[in-house]
Length: 363
Ligand code: AMP
Ligand code: MG
Image (cartoon, rainbow, N blue to C red; front, side, top):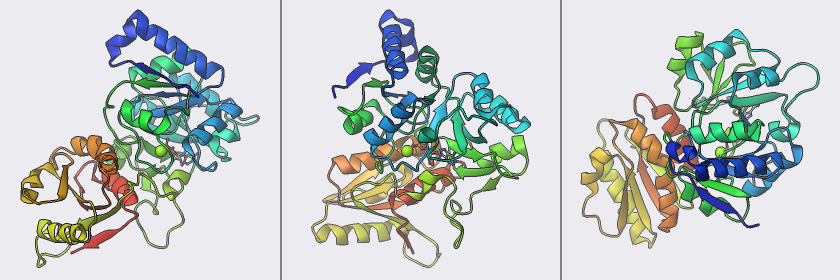
């Protein structure tokens, strides 16, 4: 398939005739059941008409995504949530007032009677994930299409989520009808997912909006025990959290310091990296900007500075592109510091641990 790649670099571009015609074209593709990759404030999404079963199936094919992993339905009017759920509950109202449009996905029950969103989109579940993104291009596209747009992240299944148009092109050129390239996204981590279908609201995937922020609006909010890493808990409630994900091609180990007595974290990382390098593996270190100088002068080990520990927005924004860069550079063995920062540390480490297949070296 020939993929049309359209550049639309900023919000102002939407006001131009050319920008408007790109959105018109993309809306038309969605209406006739095609696939359009588009930017959101979190990561790029791969969109299709959420009520069109054949279109939803095409998303799974293009990504190579397991069919039991449901898609998030993107909306551009609160009334669309009411259409899906049958009503807006007080919790939905409170969350949408506080966080929409924005990086929060709500899991809700479908309305009684005939459900609106087909099982092809919900991965066979009776609940649906709904998000109202804030990115102006995402909004313009949803409105122009006149549809709700089902969209998972626009990467091949298993690869790090795409945070630039170039990442999407790498993964999906030739597999989808259109890619709207808008450069780098703002946040760089997928949305926080909160399940509103149980007795107590539960975070199924940590993201940019933290559990504390959600608690301020809702009162008690739980974290899925599987995601919290509690041993012996049931599998994660969000099917997508069960898969190995975000993984670079290299074997990645996270090195964390747990004892006061041991050598310094950086010394240990350097030793591990040199040993791997001497075995002939292309070896990398991922570190916080504050520590980058400690790894200076290492020969034949590549050091990736992921951003400042003191600014976790920066680390969140760079995480997936650093993992992709490791692939591009042909890295075979990676050692990473942990980035358990105060605000976004939970969300960042959730992704990094999955990328590492939970391989942690504690010293
Ligand atoms: P992605 O858009 O690629 O980040 O994937 C969407 C995420 O939302 C996956 O982890 C899904 O498992 C999760 N998800 C979507 N719908 C539901 C649902 N009804 N219940 C629980 N998790 C869901
Ligand atoms: Mg994804």
